[in-house]
Length: 398
Image (cartoon, rainbow, N blue to C red; front, side):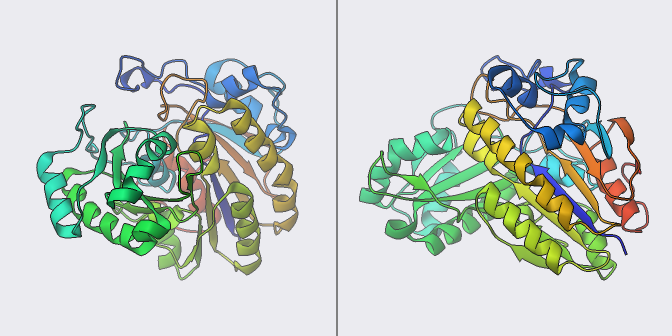
């Protein structure tokens, strides 16, 4: 029986969505013209021959009208297409849920771009229930700079660093040793209970180590506390059919563990790639292996690091032949993304973009899936390949 390996290249967008003018950084700049892959290729001699052979260049051409520098407008294997999101927002849960067949049917809650940012009653309740001496930050910020700004004071005072972004998130950074990793998780669990009433999509624990601003470093022990999807996702449907779902990286957190049978934590794209290969060894007939490759977004997109992003894409591309070599004859590989994060863009936030859909199987004839009107078509195509009944959203292109 067939298997599906679904890899989400976090933030690897391929051009502004039709509604990009409605999304921006909150300071008057919208996302029209954003193009994560295209702009990286403009600024860096990007070499991703394996992704290009599967249709990355062709997908960018369909999305934007232009072929990225160094790529081809002709795919040389598999089925390729462009995904367009219908969910509100441009963050991780929206994209992932829709990829798994469940578009987000509601508006997320967001915090205002004021200082202080969080409602006083929310802060007071969190401090009381978590027995905190107070909080630091309380503003919109990017993860590494906010730790550098408040990290030493956090160590001295024991106050966690609380911040947000233009996405629907409440993030808490704390030192793994001075504050304690489990204590950070406990505080985040309380914060999640409080913020879920405001329809905030995620509370993210951001642990770090080091003793000074120059030596602070975020660790791989990040944990996301997320609102559960409102309907059965592809993961739930696979599990309900008696199959196994291998959730690698932050996949389990994104779906609030719903539908997950094997949770595999890992940090760093190359380690995530290793875990994906290992899961393929364990996966049986009809199983789903799903991985989020977070470094593209977390390490390079938000930091506006074009060379770093480009090199991460090249490193992933170089290992694709390993994955393809491990595929069974009836396996299906799907490579896609959940949103954009153009490292050449203003601000440090995600960008509202269309995403590539690159599919490969030894049994799959070459062709184009065209422009898909919803990410849910990805989940429905995976479900069709696995022999599952169609879901209520999207339709298979296979």
